[in-house]
Length: 296
Image (cartoon, rainbow, N blue to C red; front, side, top):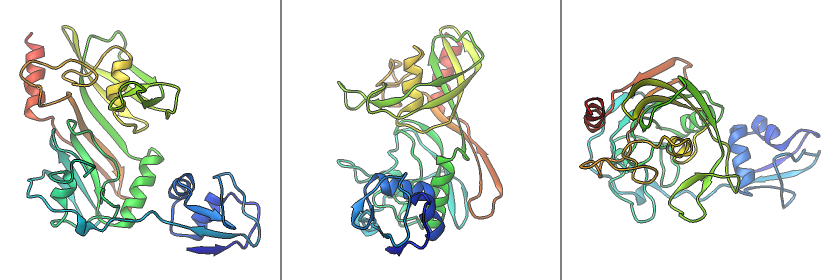
């Protein structure tokens, strides 16, 4: 797409959000990936357009959905309409295909049965949950909804509440962890709190119930970094119970994974503006370990 600039002095991300179907957030991401050029040159988000500038918008190549194979896996669909799906994801299910794992993911379970926005190997996926994190997540059925939901999440207009059982007991009833997260330099499969090549990360929490050496908490995400709650809990010396990467595994529950559950999600429907709110209980394994802790 090429655009001839007819105004001057406006930031390019704002200008393009007014002149195209793209949101400002989407445009900023394209600029970061060097997919927007002005007069043949790569620019930054703070570039101000000048009269006569020629803007070229490139797009990343999209892999056709035909390259993905559907999988006959049962799904717990909490809500569905023409624009979106709310799914209660099972613990142990990978969200989208990736190198070494192109089958039996949530995406594979969805394709062939539902229309999805086209986003390469992550069709419909506007946010993700770790493999062993259970609970609610959103899926977009068309590109309009995908763009809107992505922007809403980026602008903190989607409330996401998590239930977590962590080691140790808290002195305070509530708290906020504001600590940047990046890739661990020694163990690449792990994330860590660091100031090097990191992104800001903010997690709010409140205590729901205390037990002997354990605490049940509710977490609310302000940002959505990889492993965010798991890393932040480890950072404050309260790792999530049964976390195989950041904590200790409970005997007999190695395959279940961390006791972290996306229990509630609240947002305005991207097309109608109607407030939607959903809440689901944790899986049985979560409750089994919780009962073991209560009776310990």
